[in-house]
Image 1: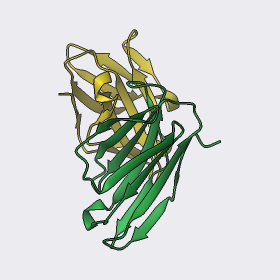
Image 2: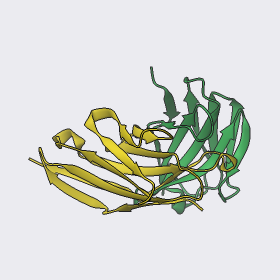
Image 3: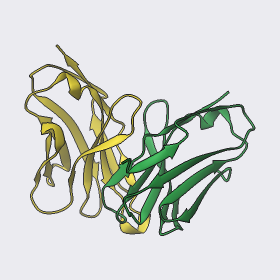
Length: 115
Length: 112
């Protein structure tokens, strides 16, 4: 079975500081991995995805993530936090084709940005 | 243009009532999904449809019945609502199974 674990339900950084949100996954097949962001009272917006190929993936709003197979990790980073980055972030792995391609989510990490 | 839309955005109702949530996508995608987000923000798949065919029913009570009249629409009907059904329900779509999914704005259901 596939699963996702996000380390830290709350992360607080200062504006301008590095953002690091941790995600580890478990999958018996090569995973497709995603990061989504959810602003208050809104739906989920895709930040970036890894399917195959280059392991360092760049997304929107200056975020990037690196797929590390040996560590089963897909951590999300941003060099310099902005106040507008405050939101809930979800890491997800895509289920097998015969599981309908469902997304299996981590529990989410709430990012706070201090001025 | 809204890619994935849901109506209504808010739904407040009493226990025992029946309600429906509608979802439409204009992305031309083949696959649509319903997810439930609980009060702790945990997201869990409920259903997946591919070209109007049910692919996943993730042990959801029979009171929940999805219907896909065409591949651009996936509606969710809930019978005999219970307090535990209170949650935010998200519709999503993807080009095909395994591809990235695009989410609607959510429907916040409150059962009193």
